[in-house]
Image 1 (cartoon, helix red, strand yellow):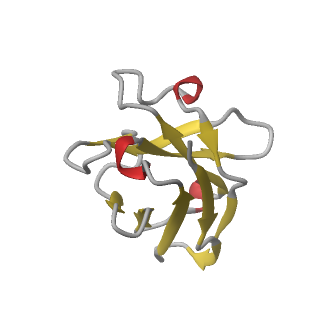
Image 2 (spheres, rainbow, N blue to C red; image 1 turned 90 degrees about the vertical axis):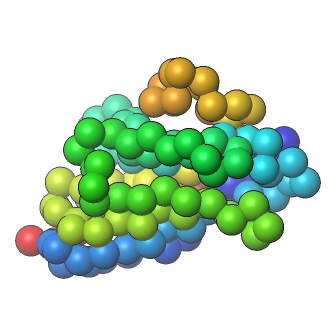
Length: 125
């Protein structure tokens, strides 16, 4: 079992960058696939990126490919989301989530068992 805790959100101007961090407790962190999702007001939770337990495999939503990079440091029990070229439409609460393994349904929130509390990202125009 892992408990994700996000940090690194904030206010940034359009075109700027932010790096989100997700620290997860638990000795088995490296066995969990990790994902980042976002949720804007009045909208459903939306997949952003996922990474396998080893870090060898990564997946991205089409709208963030080339702008966002997911990575992890298993020695620190932490996963990151580097977000570049941010736009106002990226504004949302960003959530980190853990799944027992990286299935082909990595973009589906129901496949993730453990969720953080979220961190707000606001991009001003």
